[in-house]
Amino acid sequence: MREFAYKSRDGDVYVLINVNYGDALEKITENYTGCAVFVSRSIVDRVHTKCPLIPVIDGEEGKSIEAVLSIVRSAHELSIDRDGLFIGVGGGSVLDVVGFSASIYLRGVDYVNVPTTMLSMVDASLGGKTGVNALGLKNVIGVIRQPRYVIIDLTFLESLPMPNYIDGFAEVIKYGITMDRELLGQVMSNTDKLLGRDYGVLEEVIYRSLRDKASIVEVDELDRGNARAVLNYGHTVGHAIESVSNFSISHGRAVALGMICEARIGVKLGYTPRYVPDLLMDVLSRFNLDNRVAIDVNGLVNAMVRDKKRSGEFIKLPVVIDVGMWDMVKVRIRDLMNLVIGECGSMP
Ligand SMILES: NC(=O)c1ccc[n+]([C@@H]2O[C@H](COP(=O)([O-])OP(=O)(O)OC[C@H]3O[C@@H](n4cnc5c(N)ncnc54)[C@H](O)[C@@H]3O)[C@@H](O)[C@H]2O)c1
View (cartoon, rainbow, N blue to C red):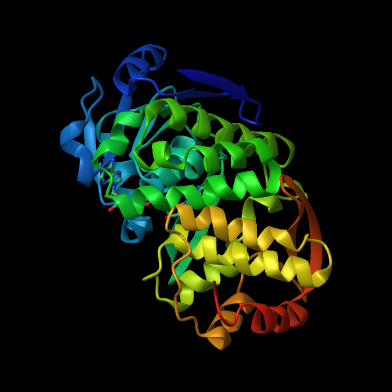
């Protein structure tokens, strides 16, 4: 078991890794006047707590304003007051919608994240970004409000299909290549154990990943400075790949390809050492995240123009300057498009 806490505007956030979620929740809920567990429909049969269980739709269709209203209605019917607690149990989609609902119910109640996918264990459960999709746009409505606790019970991973499980490693590799050389080394020397879901190695890798993310959230919680941009490595191109594939390419695979493309762009811009794209390919291939896919580069470029992180004519692009070290550069959108066309036409 590992644990740590990080500081936020909303107070300290406690992160518990490799614990039994039931035991942890029993202690935490003692301090609240009421509680409700909003759980992904796919795992509702596996979840047992003293708090009432409310199944919610997961996936992108579950991240809707209608789902928020339904959660608010359930909380109201259960007479959850301002000292009550929301608990989200599921993948990133469920945590995003439950966290958002908690943030606006009675102008904000505490919430706990219990992630059940690899991606949500290493990424979506920590950092306080909550929200839903609307008007055909992803995460267009949302707020940043931290959970009180993040509880990681590795046994949830047992039922996760292999492609979903592997997807989360794109984010782990992202932390490694941008800010944690040691983590990247651990991932490379323990690939077989990680693919076999060995709890000992997983505990360490999830702990380091979340600590890395928390260290960034602590200095740029609201994503207004430059620090949080590093968490977006591979995502500027990755989100565009997801979008042009109509979400048939999963988030992890899109981010993997995005990292390779952005590493090549970093080399071209003169910031990234030449060996980095090859190193990335090597580690991603160990997790089968380097599949060749046909990408419509023009569609990709059009999707990038609509990126919500652009600011006027420029976009902030994190670049790897050595393994485990990064910097942020501002690139003119027009130049970035030309770089994508030149460097990422055939990937990997
Ligand atoms: N808030 C953040 O900081 C942040 C960060 C990254 C991603 N996200 C969001 O997370 C979402 C993606 O999260 P995800 O990859 O966890 O996908 P997801 O929540 O859509 O879940 C993927 C699938 O796994 C199933 N599932 C969940 N737990 C399971 C388990 N233990 N066993 C078997 N099946 C299980 C779900 O039913 C679903 O079909 C996206 O909406 C993305 O925007 C948020």
